[in-house]
Image (cartoon, rainbow, N blue to C red; front, top):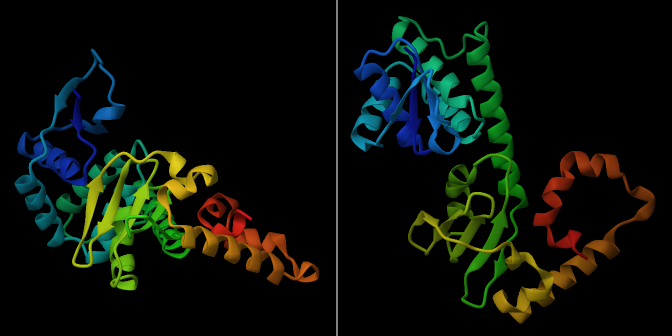
Length: 255
């Protein structure tokens, strides 16, 4: 009988499900996020309780057989949120523990190849967020930015912004996933909170942001518009480097 291991959506939850797979010597199992699970009479559903100790043991076991880069691939693939990625990761781990040699670069295996491709897509999205995030100063004295990336890359962005903006308080909020990273001049931490998309509304801007900030945004937009040389405009090249789906982050695109 096939088992469906249902976890809470966290990376530690996924690793806890992997631990359960080995602990109970299962032959056939799929791992599914709770939000994506559906009742079935054909399989045995098992809800997995996240256990940080067990998750750590799985990760420690992987560290003995998989390189740092290989473990990064697993984590980045997880952050893709592709519905079937958990089973690809389980396949990767099963092959790792059953092989005497490294399998992380065995691209003859289509699932290993898939994890490699997905992790690269997530990495590209991470670097685009590094480049395109724009902060605005709130009335509370916090530099604030919103994002809605295709993949859940915010945990990967933490160190970049912590180093780059170490002298100011900031909050980057993922509108799609309803959580953010807050830096208080000492440490950065993931926080869950509800912020409405209306925070980006131009008509409500002064509710959230300082007058000086709004003047600066407008001046920057005017400068950008006037500094363009129409005869040298290459929209195809421009879109290649800054795809349209990222324009909503850029104040110069709003004027």
